Image (cartoon, rainbow, N blue to C red; front, side, top):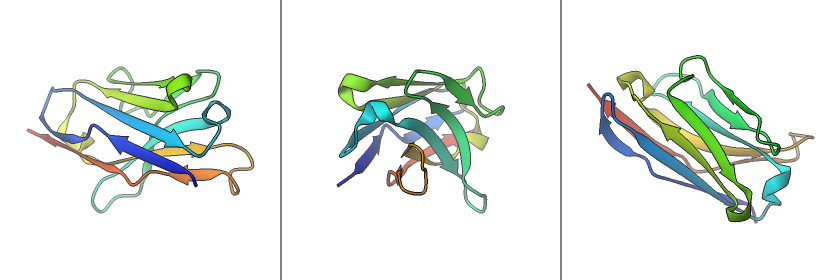
Length: 118
């Protein structure tokens, strides 16, 4: 049984920081690309950041220079460090694990709320 459990969400003022964690179980973590998505009310889910099993990262333009993702393979955990938070970063953040073929190997966490007040 695959589980992705996010933690670290909460409420913070504009300009503040939060660090999200996602602990994975039930998969060979090092085989998977790990990604963070977010969904704000009334909007589509969007990719925030991803990190390959080799450590190559990719970021949405809206978070470049402010967010950093990293993974700890021995701990089966991926992190999202969020700095200089803005009210528009308010959303539910989801952890995602996938490998190809993605239609057979695509797992999601339950999400964690991040709220940034102005």
